[in-house]
Structure formats: structure tokens, C-alpha cells
Image (tube, rainbow over all chains, first blue to last red; front, side, top):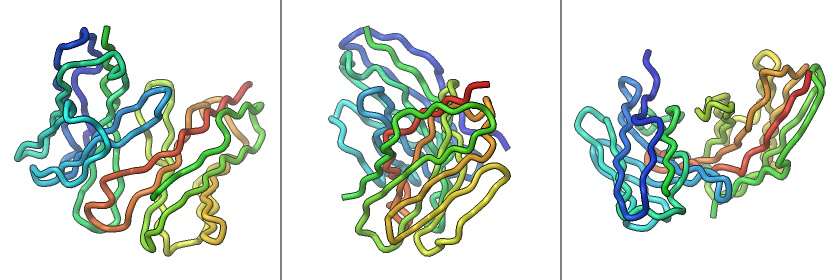
Length: 114
Length: 117
């Protein structure tokens, strides 16, 4: 079974630009969560999508948004990039069925904002 | 509020030593899940174990073992006879026990383990 894939793996942007990251889940997984990892703040939850609806949201500004498509693939968008947005962005997918669940992570997208 | 504390920031051991990584959690939920993930230098988080709040049995998987104690809100991870390939950052995480609440993992800050030959 193929794992979680994220594209692109590396991205360099400048302040003020916007960026879109993509995540394709493991087959059968309907829940997609996004996390930001920085040396200072560690791993922080951004949001979770299930059946094309945002089910949970972390404490991030509105510049961070996401969506999920009918095939469960998800994208997250960051608008008006700031230097502090430089981070590893990890996507995790799970069955999302409501029973005991485990999130499986992709390799991440490393975003550098100059 | 939910919280996970990994007090050990870095640990360095010599190959074949046993090492225990500590994890203490806080939650008001009666049903919850605890996890350990490994993050090698490549960056991808690798799932190691999930434990639910009603199952306090310790678990052993090869050289890895986990000790869950609800009385002390701890979920510690021991590597026996460590190997260089065990070098990584290890994260303990907590989630709620119901459908939507499982989609939000609360992570500790991680423990960087270095195993020297």
C-alpha cells in the first residue's frame, strides 16, 4: 500500500507570496490533518479535514487555510507569507471512521521564506 | 487542556545500552489515545505504537517496550540494546478518544536520541 505523499518536498518563497502544498492520503483514508514543525514551537496542529469538511482547527491565523477534495486529497494554502512561516509542513492521514485511529505521516514539505 | 511533556531534550548513549524515554501527559478526557513516533533525519514521522486509555498492559515489540501507567499519567518508552539506527527524535503524542477528536494530535517537544558506536 502506498504511503502518504506530499508535494512539493522543498519550496523557497519570498515574503508576501502565497504557497499551496498538496497531500495525497493512503488509499481508504478519509481524514487528513496538517501540522507545522519548527525548532522553536515543535509540532503544532493546523487543521483536519474529513469528507471535504474542516473538522478541527488549531490556533493559527486565517492566512493558513486548507481544503479537501472528493478523493480525500488535501491542499493547504498560506497567503502573505512571513519569515516565521518557514517550517516543515507535515500531512497525516487516517481512516477517520470514528473507531480507534492512527495518523500516518508523509515526508513533509520544507518551506523556506526569504 | 491537553499537554504532553517530554522532559529529556537530548540523550546520548553508547550502542547496546538500554535507554528509557519519558513521557508525561495531561488530559481531562476519560477516553484518549497515546502514541509514540520516531523522526529520523529524513523528517518523516514513523508511527511506533498506539495505546488507548483503557489498556494499561505493557507492550513489547522486539527491542522496544512501552510502560503505560495511568496513576502517574506516564507512557514511557524503552529501547533495549540500542543500535546506531535508533538515533532519531522520538515524539510522544496524545489525542482524544472520539472520531473528530482523534484528528488533533498534541505532541511533546521530542527527545533526541543519539546512539554512538
